[in-house]
Length: 137
Image: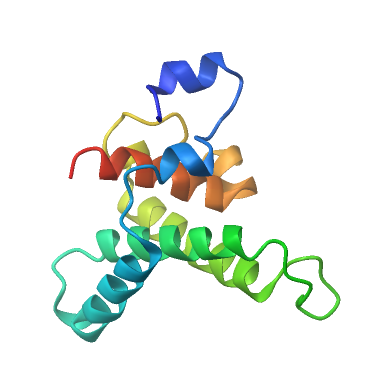
């Protein structure tokens, strides 16, 4: 399970592993359903962060399951699922940075949205934020 930011930093790893980050996550099908349902009312959301966080996390999970596929974006080593997960992760980063959020929406994480590790690996940032969010649900 995802430990404290000190546990992660002590291990020399900036992000929780996918298994640790998504250990408490609902099924991919359940999350896709939530994202689709919530997207219908997106204009009425008081805070879009949960939507973008859950969408980025489910796209990351889908991309992780698709890593063995041979279909790739033309001229790239990434799959379509990887590209979509990366784009959605960057959307969450931009939203959090614009809001001036600290990691985890507070100060529990180790990397803020504008941290070089976050910019370099936006999907790692999604895993950090999802692990922090889900443990409070």
